[in-house]
Image 1 (tube, rainbow, N blue to C red):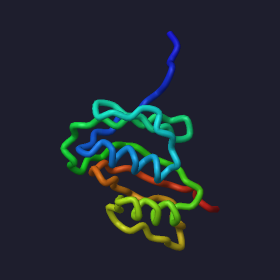
Image 2: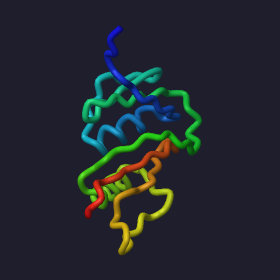
Image 3: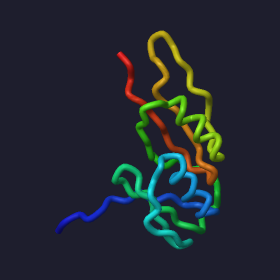
Image 4: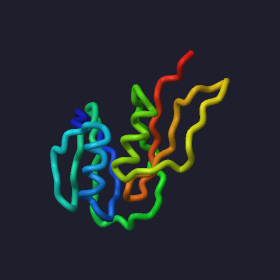
Length: 116
């Protein structure tokens, strides 16, 4: 047996809004778009969007590592996403993790490499 793809599925009440959010936030490529199943490819990872969700807040376990977390947070907010709480720089830990929510209530993380 050969694995052809690994996909991560999200449920969405408004599947098009969810698909466009991830496409636009991470410069992904939409490879399939329909209510029952859509796909956006981000750095060779496939995020599947399944319509028919309830739009309720749900933890997904999904995480994206970015090179500029502050810029990613601003872009995410401009696309309708939000933070569960504002990330904070400390003397011990520079900003490296943001807990986020997409417009459909799916929670995900954005991280950047820790600066040493």
